[in-house]
Image 1 (cartoon, rainbow, N blue to C red):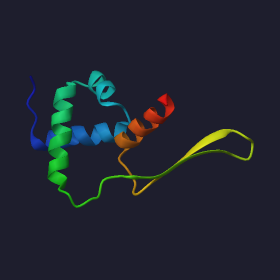
Image 2 (image 1 turned 60 degrees about the vertical axis):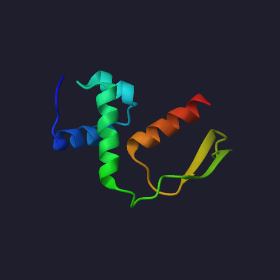
Image 3 (image 1 turned 180 degrees about the vertical axis):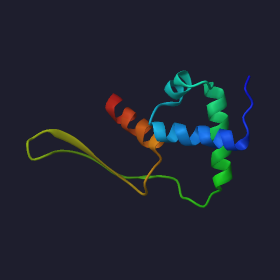
Image 4 (image 1 turned 135 degrees about the vertical axis):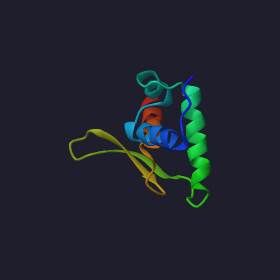
Length: 95
């Protein structure tokens, strides 16, 4: 079991959020367990405090572009993390 310093844990979270991967996929590609990744995600969010409001859906609409290609328009209250956006898009694709 590898112990990480706070700085190493926060760097792990930064890399995960930038990766756009699911927690399981990121963990399997790196040398970290999903449990450890979730620990550092929780710890990093606690350190951020509650200053930022959570990302909330504002609108989700189906439509098509000028060529008739189906599109989905997603409006959010603020810019989410890459990880949140990846999970959101994955969920939309599965629906």
